[in-house]
Image (cartoon, rainbow, N blue to C red):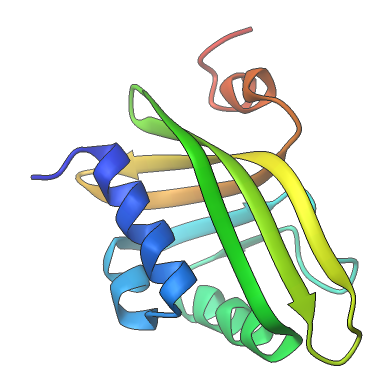
Length: 133
């Protein structure tokens, strides 16, 4: 079985390639997405494949391009923290996104059960994961 960092890398590559099937293959059926930098018109937390697919479609409609480049992955227990650089271009608005943040993936049995986006620091991500006070 691949380790958690390899699974996180596959998920990121699938996201950037817009490979819907490959991305959802690494998620647990009850996976949750929490976006601490969410847009005002979107929920901060969503759960389950149907809700995640809906968010994917919203992002696809809203952006001509949306990518995340990861400069570092760190495995800590059942979690992987990534140093992420999100970039995108709004389709209709033309608004550019250029954000550096830390994202946290939680794993269970080789599947992603939670993705938490938008931490300002690695320490903040560790604290939310309950790994450091």
